Length: 137
Image 1 (cartoon, helix red, strand yellow):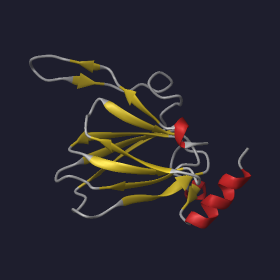
Image 2 (tube, one colour):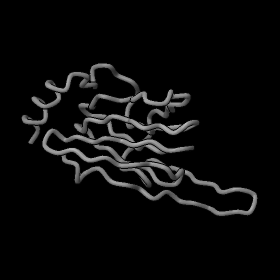
Image 3 (cartoon, one colour):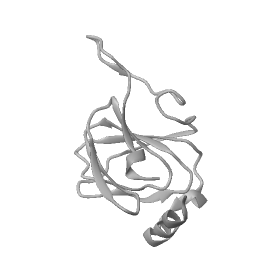
Image 4 (cartoon, one colour):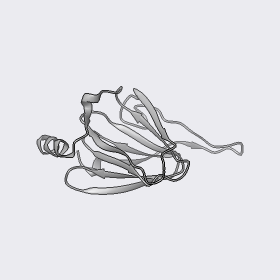
């Protein structure tokens, strides 16, 4: 995988004077069935989350409220993507190291995942991640 495989996904936005509505459907807005949804909130200023990669798991990350940045690393290059719209998601394939940083006050980060939680799917050591990336065709 490479950073080129990471992409912003514009989600449907149904505007209404009573408030907007956005939805996410597996195999439609993301190229996987959604097996798990979780969210991060009350992240103190200056803290970061993530700091790992996945062997097989794919994700869509959305700033439901506020903003934060996602630092992406494919083992060859790095880039940072800022999320600050609840109708824009960031698709991440497998084998992309990610760190979530610069959370605004009150930010809420929602994550749709292709698999249920499995600790064996995580690379938490950057050197082990790099070794796996070098072996990935």
